[in-house]
Length: 458
Ligand code: IFM
Image (tube, rainbow, N blue to C red):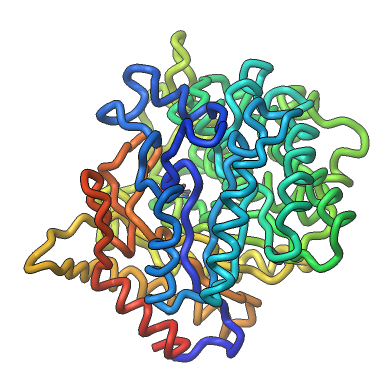
């Protein structure tokens, strides 16, 4: 099973999850620093303050990448390192770090793929409403311009946002991520401004360089009902709404310049944010699209009363959960309690190709699983991760055979790291990290992945 000759093999991380050095070289606070300091928000009151100290150990970490034969490394840039207050003053020492990282990657023949925003919004911007403030789109474009200008001579592949669904709906909708706001209306506002920020950033980066390859990274999955529900059951509406929020909100606006009808039908909660010209900005052509895939979104009908609404304290469910509940887990369930549904990745890719005729080339920008196998005699034989990789790569290969233009695969994650509200207890790395000693130990899956890379397949 061979992949196309120029298929790009890599692995991914993000700034707050690995860098640590939270107060070094003038870095400002991000919404995640604030969230982690808030009691009860993150398991064990963990934070990314030290993480895996990549800021100080990046050279050793690039050597690890090189030993695995990675062709590309997807990392994100911490906005609060570049502009500690979010706007205005530029912190040169922050830019210098990414400069050094990029040079080291290139020295080792590894292509840098930079993501501009992986959830670490400067905290001062949240004081002004964060992504619910329409100005956030311009704040982001200004920041993008600074970073792109500094690195575009050596970084040729750029993503604007990572998983804006998570920023909007987990951050502002149900509040399990920073900034911890529980207001679905704000989630929709944030979603629109994230998209607008993406469009503005694309425009400014294009004007700076014509040879940057520009894209966005979305977390998406097939959304469906298992079992049957009679016509008129709220489950049908719930599934349509979930699909609209997880997939179509992003794909339709970015590639068709339209909001999905299901969302427009929600009325002012959506339409109030949309100003004339916004959709033209959002749908500016992009060169590639990143897909982060973990598991399908599977539900079964739920006949119990309630569900899908916020209670008076703001606790509750995402829009689109009334009349459904999660389907029983399937496959090799991960430590996170996620199903494994590899064929969903193939289905998602084929469906994207069939639904969007202007779909640009696709990269799998994240895919991985949390499995914490023990160290035995200095080795970690993580057979479940190896199986996960094999099954998902087969799905990608089948999608390519079925005509989808998939150009690369980045495994999530290269290293164990800070897994957001889950703290350090979910281990996604190809490489194990001892969080006390900072010792890196490649798991067996990393050598397995290295062999796949060197064979360009199996
Ligand atoms: O760790 C995250 C990453 O930051 C974004 N995508 C999903 C991963 C696993 O939850």
